[in-house]
Image (cartoon, rainbow, N blue to C red):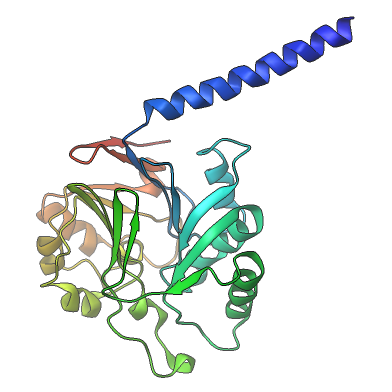
Length: 285
């Protein structure tokens, strides 16, 4: 009898958890949620649209870490990711996506198609894509657009593809997605540098939130680029490193332009919620 009563208590407890998750989901209706994870020296962003579609941009350097972070953002029984976007194939952007492909049901993959032929990471990526997603992949470049409910993603870079993958600077071909929900926009810049920024200036790159390129490298985020984007918030995804990231020069340019700047090594994970007009910023998540 006691065993039966205990089973009923456990079932009721689980039902209460499910109810709580459902209530919390209802409270977040009509909000776009963008979480910049604290995953060390690398990029990894989780996006949940108001319609509950899920998008991941880059996966950080660790195979398992971003999957663990995502598991805390969605109900434990739900394993669906609608889209992952790989900006480029550097390990600190790629590795965690391999873990996501293994652990989650990924519906679509978007990337730039630029790889290092013969490299182990290339073989791993291509084989995992084929195994886990099959044909649901898209190679995109500037001018391509994805519409997901009321959220749009415009790809602003690269404007062309390299002729020879064997001698390619991967950073130069980083995808630059601009995500907008009504009047609020987020610009993700991968690892582009001054040269690519200069070619983007003149396009519609304005955004409320700017993910700073290349973890705050001194070779990116120019004054002119900052003026063109005109963000109210900049986020630097960075961890312990030997590269001097984020550089004093980049931080100085952000101060000079009066841009509020958060960095994951100091402020922890940063969540930015949008109702389409206003932003709510949550740090140390």
